[in-house]
Length: 163
Image 1 (cartoon, helix red, strand yellow):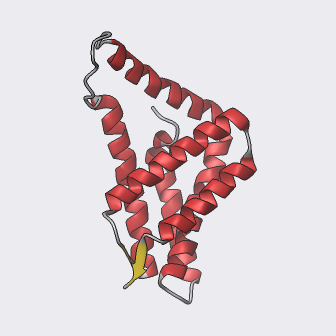
Image 2: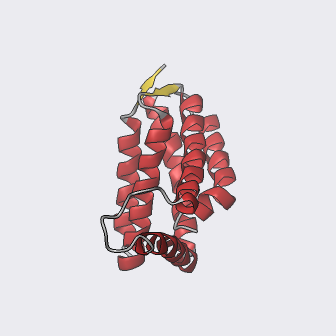
């Protein structure tokens, strides 16, 4: 139903876990440096899948926007009340849960600990990837998308410490 949610939930988690486990097995160090390697390994599995399915990504955005538009339009012109949409909210919670699993696996395998609640970090990661995919659908600028993903990995690694 949304740009990266279907992919993360349907087929990417096993690919990400496999990439993380493979990268972890090749490391001879732990800590934050290892975390960056593992985050990069996981996130790197995401880009080819997103890039190869632009039609699916676009349909997912359209579906999400349709649900949200209908909810907001049904409120009329008076002062709208911001109440979570049950369908869209559940979808994002599912994505957050999948990304939380990804982040926790990276932390365990790297010997690090997140400084903030993992679900909050996951929500941030989902939001950044959502925006990156939407931008890529508009401008098809692979380089910018890859820079965003690299910067995201660097930023995420600042949210953890060695244990």
